[in-house]
Length: 545
Image (cartoon, rainbow, N blue to C red; front, side, top):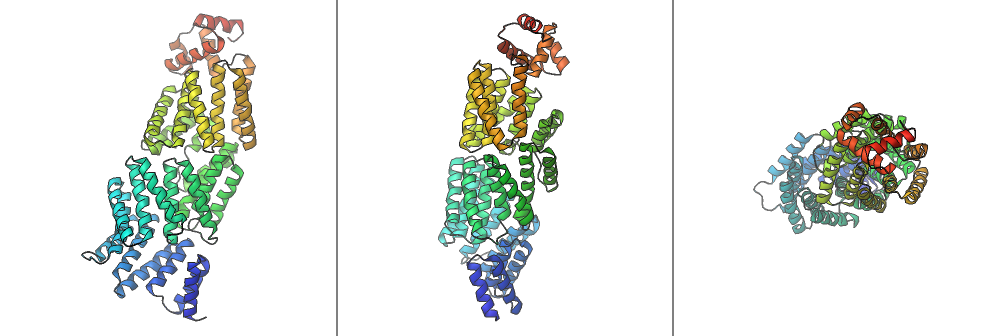
């Protein structure tokens, strides 16, 4: 086959999204005779889709110089910007900025390269995003949209709309920002964008929606990304990211076995390319989470260690595993460390539910209440259903420990309902365990039994062994003494019966006086007494001393 035939074949295969065959044909044509700039870009893009980032940048750099030799600065600008983009995601920001600056210099003082200015602004936008300049990013993204519309460049319009939406959300305008993000996604799902830009918009949008806890959108756009990937079976570049997104949704919905299968595929088949390299660390963490939920702690430990080595902090999963292993001090130390190192606001949301659970487990109710208030503030400001559910769950758990069963019941039922609507089967079931405990405090044993029976079925079906064990302990603990007292409440009652004051009990059990008073309120409610004297008498009468 001659060079021209190989070239035409490569172009046709590229148009058909047959990336591997297109790359082979274009490489063969280039070997026979150096490709023209446009065809070098096709060669580079096919390399990108196969996860060969260095080959992608090398081909673009050749196209950049060839365009300059041909007197085509606008085409050279586009190459320079995409080279910078590739370098930026490969962890070379200084070199990336150098390419952005080179692109900008090429058209300084030119008025006839409007589309090229749009790509120069993409480079400037990326610099502003690196510097955390949301207001500047919004202004630049708006300019990109205007130029893209004027030049009928769908790629520019989609990039601009997406980043306008991201910037608006960061600046507090969540509703309008999310609408723009959705609009940018329509161009992707309609097939209007070039392959690389389509992949970038897919992955950036899903990652951003994850970051603001728009879980319904994550589910919807991940389904669309899956369909896009399935139409390109030999694509590597975005497959690993897609697998992790799918596994996250499977984990949330309780398909844990299927999630593990997807995560193993990510590490084994889709490790090349900058995006996939980032995904591998997330995959290891998520693998650890699934094993933790199943009670497979040795496997979870190994996965969390692997995620740490890949640069992904294994929190909050590692702390929750330590708590499940009975290592509450280690759990508390690690989750406190993680929270202290994380900026306030949305970045802390992923840690706060675990923090509340662990603080309540070690009787630091004040810390749990403070974290619950922070979640509530973020929920009021950001408004996503998932954060609202987290905040209600946390408020309910704190109220339950403080003995306010009525408030706890309202909050926990709301949390369980929202989690169920979001498809978060396991998290909804855990909220229902607390609902049952609130019902018991209110004397409604029938409803508590119904809730616990339903939850047991869910945990059994999921294979959530730690939750089943905790449920059995909860029910056995209540049956063992017949009075519904927890182990800690029995300790407090024994000391009350010996005449100790709240201060003395706090010192003996290493608790705050506030926590001792809260335990006493719960004891009075469960035993149906109203004073220390009556509680002490009950303890002596029922051999609890």
